[in-house]
Image 1 (cartoon, chains in turn blue, orange):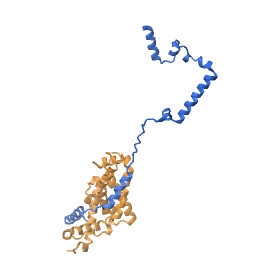
Image 2: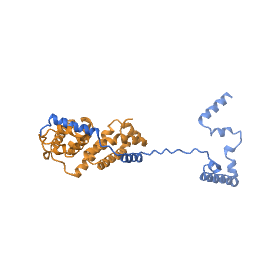
Image 3: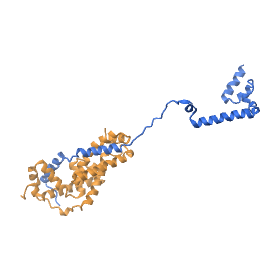
Image 4: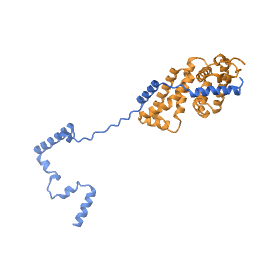
Length: 123
Length: 185
């Protein structure tokens, strides 16, 4: 097939130019449908804000029913042991004589022991 | 805002960015699809399909790696090709008449609307790839390297397709003398 002549090229260019000036345009309904598609397809990021409300009532302050039940059971067990085996309770060093400071120092962290030793040296 | 930035904003949940991107891209894609398919309803289906695919890949989009419009054109070109192949066999070059008459004189006598219609009719007889290349180059105004990226061919192949497409168009228009309103000189 031979190449188009310059006149044929010019003729084509006139047609191209006419077509460029009158592009097929989408109608408004179609554009609205596309916009609705975009809206529906937009990823949803649900930012859940944690509630920081203050606890109300004795049960909430204790940490709920489960924690309160555990606390009540432990208290009852302590009282029962105190009544049934008072000797065991009295022999515990933590409830011993107030002068037994050496026994209390065993429960202190290492740093506090150092501070205590320094105080004793100073004293 | 660039197409790239709008798509990233959309992926981050900004639906208004999606709407804006739709208004930037859809008219161009619709224009191309309408010209290649010659059918508005089919062009709407193709463009809608393309935009839905764009929304689906938005979260994985890597900004700066490709142009959003090139990606969309590529999808639309492929979707149009699929539809054309299902519709009818492509026209052989041999079936198109040699351009004998000078179409310039006839074209100059035509109204703008008649020119648009005559070109659309002539485009419909072009082989698929030639029609796609001619529409992208001469009607949508894309550069040859852009078209090469869209059609996944070399720039030289684009030049060859558009040159052959123009020859075929001239031949097709010459074969429609009555429509163009002139007789052999």
